[in-house]
Image (tube, rainbow, N blue to C red):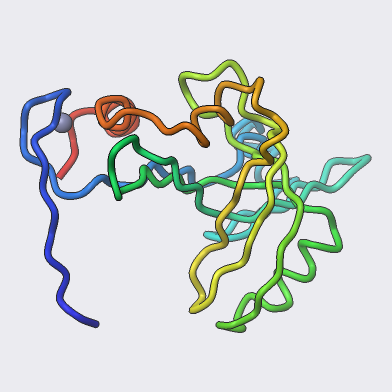
Amino acid sequence: MPKQLKMTFTCSVCGQTHQELPAIVYEAPYYYYNLSEQERIELAVLTHDFCIIQYSDQTDRFIRVVLNQKIIGSEETLQYGVWVSLSEKSYNDYAAHFKSPDYIASYFGYLSNQLPGYESTLSIKTTVETAINNNRPEIFPHDDQMDDPFVRDYYEGITREEAERRIHAAYGMEIK
Ligand SMILES: [Zn+2]
């Protein structure tokens, strides 16, 4: 692994110097957070990359992915660690090849986290592209949803200040 130069920046929110932008990560899909403690035990299975919720009348399947939010005028992106729901067929295909470092596939998935600052980001349609070297898949919101503010921001980009605001909203002032 080559040594990487660490990027630092002076933050527009708190004025301190931070290392490169940290990812905003969700450890579970929205629908998991929505369950009671008891329901989580009885209905759900959650790992770092997979989640299944088995209701009495349906089973929902989720995988963890990344979304790279463009920042205007920057090479850097604001990375989100989020979840998408997949069909049973797609989920099984992804799970079956999870340990294959160079398996390439693409699936349809619905974004399954509610990102702050938007009225609703649940059920945004995305394409899920698996990544090589066992990296997490990346999602690309479908571009026929431009009336959705989140999708518009995804394609048009957000300002660097907005990215820094979002990180502080997610982490408080505890950015290292
Ligand atoms: Zn800051």
